[in-house]
Length: 472
Image 1 (cartoon, rainbow, N blue to C red):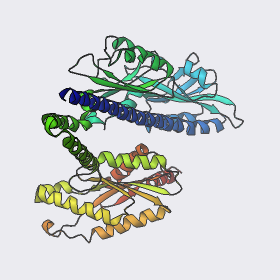
Image 2: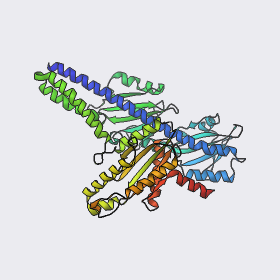
Image 3: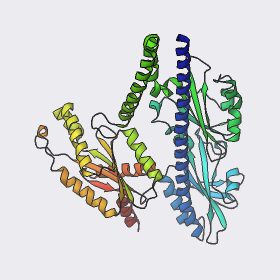
Image 4: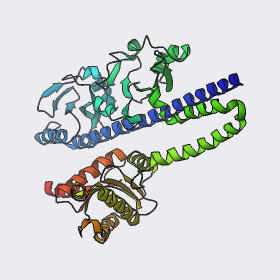
């Protein structure tokens, strides 16, 4: 019977291992989709001014060159470049440049969006790539190329940072294993992934033999590395739609398997009582497993103090909602920061501060619909997605009503001190469509609200409209 139990445990571990790999593949796919979405937004950013340049009579007019510099200063690009069809052009830092021999320039002249290899654009010891789009005139003839250099390492560093407490690391290679981008804190992998991993031992010999073939064929997979039995790891990879590149993620097995760690504890209990009451314990294990799964899921999604969604699950839920939404109505993402909360903590103590947070969280629940997404994303910071709003004016009215109702909250421990908060809001699809973009714009609006004196709300496109009015 002991042998039967060991066989049972072996099958359980194999099942857990398979589940871990499935979760890793799903997470890597989500991060791959996110990275491609970010690059898509960068291309859209380039195509808007490119369309404008195409309408001007002189591609390198003073107005165009001035606009080039202004765009660079307000974007994430290290520099922007505008070329004529002979490859001669100007950059946003005022320098002339020649890209006629560059492969990315020649491909762009074919009417394609292009992202270069880092070798053709590496400067200042940074992993830079060049994104380019064609410039069309009114007759749809290509009259130039517009592009910019961007640090691809900055794009990949933000991936996976909220998964597994940030214990893993990601990198990008081409189909031959050459490193395109990798976090600088990890020196295990050098210039070529295949060379650096040549002495790795995988779970099966087939895994090692087919790894390079997966990269060349653009196949997604997840494999277990057991070169050191005390430090097993997983590598999950997904093909990107650019240049045959592959997004890879390596994580220690102990961290990847942590969500399933409770199974090991149950195995110990089951082993001790197996001979006497094997059937009873198997049934009990199944029941406890179901209960713990539900409890763990609830804990993973909920902020313990306020009962609202926690940061990870709130952002995930909002991101998924926006990804599936066709934007027939407006979706308002709000960042809320309680004003002077540190002063409340310092004056009345953390117990009172916690009570204030609970009251404020309950107040937010009352002010929004049950279908809206409400989460606590920091100490005194909250995030709300107000779904399916028909009119932009309704958002203003709702926030005005919120501030009015906030003054009706009376907390005796605060000695008649009223609560105050600052709110930054960005609206999809008016301001942006993806969660990452909305989050950035709402955070900018929140900063503006706090900078202008706190105790107010600011909607991003209101700021933008004001700026456009000044410019006009």
